[in-house]
Each structure stands twice: as C-alpha cells, then as structure tokens.
Length: 223
Ligand code: DC
Image (cartoon, rainbow, N blue to C red):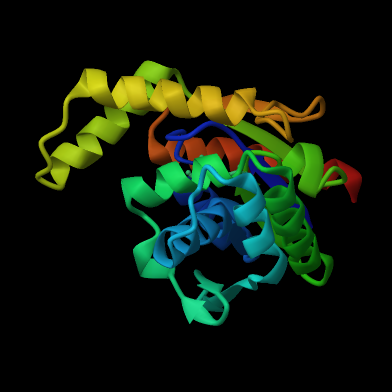
C-alpha cells in the first residue's frame, strides 16, 4: 500500500500522517525531514545555501537515510542521526531553500522511491502524489487556511513560552507557501487524482478520521 499526503506548511501533515500510518500499521516517511537534513548539513559544513552548485555537489555524495525505532523515524546524514536537530526555524528556512534546487530534489526523490519500493508506506511532503509516488493507492491534499495554519503555529510557540507575534508568523508562513508553490522544480500542487482535506474547521482527531475514511473507502473498492 502506498499513500501520498501533500500540503502546505502548518497543515499538520507530519503529526496527522504519523497517526494515520500507525492506525494502518504501515511506516510513515516524513520527507521534509530529509530536506531538513540536507539544510542542516549545509549550515554545519559552512556551505552557502544560496549557492546551488555547492549544495547540489554536496547532495551527490551525502547519504540521507531514514531508520525506524519503535515505528518512529530517525533521519541520518552520512550515518549521523540528526533527528533532534532539524526542527529549528533556521533549518526550516535552509530546507525550503535547498528544496528549490533540481539536483537536491532528484537525489531525495530517488532515495524516497528506493525506500517505498520494498515496503508499504505512507509518505508526506510536497511532491509525493505528483512526483515521488505518482501511482500511489490514495493521494490526499491536506490543507487549511493560511490564517488558521498561522494561528496553530502561533499557539504552539506560545505554549512553549516563546514570545510570538501572530502577524509575523502569518507573514513567514505566506513566504514559505510562496517558496514551496512558486519554485520551478516540482512545486507544491494538488495532484489531479488527490482528495483535498481542509482541516481549517477540523480537530486533530477529526482530521485523522477523515483521512482514514478516505483511505478505507478507496482501498476497499480496489480489492
Ligand atoms: O514538511 P517540512 O516543513 O518539514 O519541510 C521542510 C521544507 O522541505 C519545506 O519548506 C519544503 C521542503 N520539502 C520539499 O520541497 N519537498 C518535500 N517532499 C518535503 C519538504
């Protein structure tokens, strides 16, 4: 079984995908983590993320792997586990930028397709239904309004005790959307055969149920 979940930043893809995959008993590959691993490696090695040739050259040699411990994904670069280091804003910005480079995307897509070739998998990202798994059994486009996605992010930051300004969070999110949807190579878009799930007015549990229902409906009619 191959399930593709795509959507913009802040739609809750990772956490919702994780819950859906656990319910289905299949592995979840968070492909954003792989772009984050490339971004972090650039920062650590002093490679300018604006230098496409240098970042592309890095990706020709860099081994980005994933492993699973108790069903949870660990993301590695050249054998080093970077899982705990890739969730910062700096890494997020670097990931979004390096993800605009064709050479980086080609390397990541190849690694992702290799992982999906041998096992059932639910993948989340920006180009899964359109590029990585064009033959996926079910494709979901998970979205929510920009204002609601920014509100959730703002709330998350406040809950962590961070001093967050809603307007700044919304502006950063719109910028990220523009970068992910406007890039020349494999921009984020809804695959023609994807089902859109808009979580603006759904709770986390409702979002998970909605997706599970779509997957069960679609896969049942195929059997
Ligand atoms: O899903 P995320 O926020 O962890 O992804 C980080 C960045 O990586 C995001 O801004 C766009 C990029 N990305 C991508 O280009 N293609 C993917 N399949 C997944 C992520």
